[in-house]
Length: 204
Image (tube, rainbow, N blue to C red; front, side, top):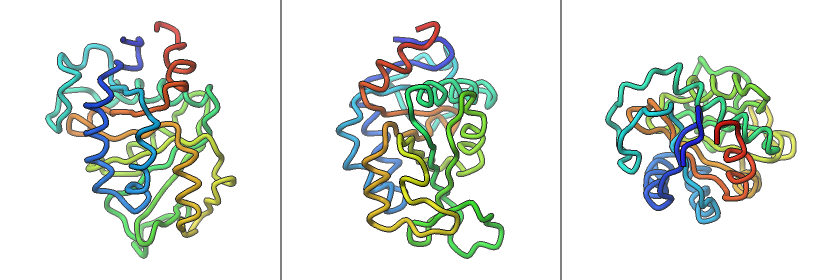
């Protein structure tokens, strides 16, 4: 099924393998997220309409997808989740580490790994910008949560300990990772969320 401007529903098994590979390169939080994947049974290729002829083939080869077009698809996808009630997007920085001189104050840490977050809003512009700026894209591990940053215990400069990690994992409704040379995204999400939010979007 294709939802205009958002992307295409894809095989959950294919997506699961791709997402697991990305999470395996992330922090302890990303590794913990693998325990939640079995509850995320809907898979989505978040990319502009017609951007790939083989959505079941997920790889790191670029498809010539323009960043602005991919961002529009991601913005619409995240806006749908925001409308559903999700509140924040968390992004792991795959390059920065605790103590890096260029880090701003709006970060938290999983051991020495850096995590950034953004509140989800109706247009999702800040969240989409974080997808681009919060990670190099190799890999991109991002998590959409239905709890707020405050409810999860996130704070600038704070440590995301085991308790906080468990709260984030429990709150996750969708996991997004990069695909096609970081030109697009693969999302795993709860079936209820997809059916009520994304599939209800105009053009579905």
